[in-house]
Length: 500
Image (cartoon, rainbow, N blue to C red; front, side, top):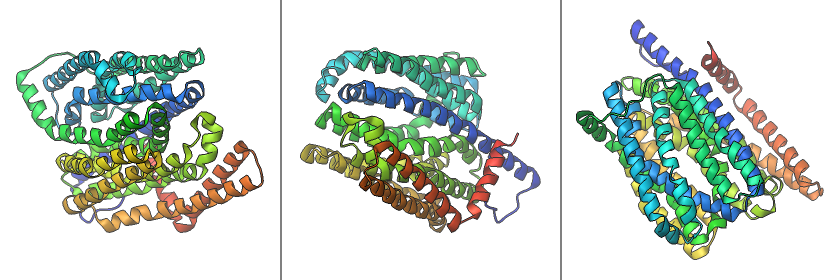
């Protein structure tokens, strides 16, 4: 890692190295968990895309938007506030778990009562049948979310790994066979239920402390008070992250929702696989390095540089081969999705930076500021997205405005990190320069190969494979030419993370 300009006492330095080493050792586990679980889930999703009509998939995706809102209500920032705390006793932990589980049960009852009006609001009659069943996952999601956060806080990465893989395995092992049998929309609903039950059971068995539902008044007051910054941030983040789905689903219908959501999920994969996984491992370290902001900022710069270097390769190649990817992998049912996918790949690249800085600010008590940024986005960009969906019926314009929205988020986060957390803008620019230049080269080469082979009348699969290989080689070559030392530095980080 980058050196700091002052020497810490030997015992302090050893403690700091222990913290950063534990965080680094968590990176392989968090990334392996995501790669295996999401890779398994992605394969299942692509298979389901061939078996289930986009309109039926759109119904379930709309229901999941509602369920995600219920999950937000059940958490209320309570479990996240425990992660950011330096010390947590059992009374406080048990109280938070009890509060979350009680609120989750109330949310399920509310979903049962309001299923009809909600389906009418979205213009989707099938949603009235699907939503009451999907709402049950709020309870399993609450248990899973609480245990996952507590394991993150304690840096117990192996159990988290098992829980995340169980989530994907439960979904795919149930949804795919049922879809093949013609269950349609219900195959997806059953998959969601199976995933939640299996993951919560695995995490419950692996959690080293016994979960005891108890409610202590004093601890409840403390928990609610400390969770307020994270509640406001989570609420505004949820709205900014889901209102565009609501606009597409309510105004353009289930098929448009399926096309848009599939593009969104594919373009967010690198951020989820890399930025969020590294953040899970490094947030506890950031919390413990609050007294050494220069060291924390240096760690952030290294993280952004290599996260982008890893994330921009698949995004650049996918954006360039989008027409062939849609045609060859997803099939004719998903026609006209490629311009949306290419546009959202740009959004996905910016997400890696905003996600890294956002988690860094969260760990350094910047949640209130992030809530203000999210509120500003809600006021400024979300109305534009609704207007675009209502007036133009253009999914691509919605995707472009989503890129504007994430850019609006990035600017104030960088400003705050620079002014409050000693994160230098010059250092940020240096961190992103190499990945951006390599990505530009990869896009140009991939496009040239794809278009050239298209003119040669080559079929879609050979064209897709050749273009992907060419883009990958171009990206690797550009990285080596521009900065050969980046490879050796990355190798050093990986060896530290995987050392026993």
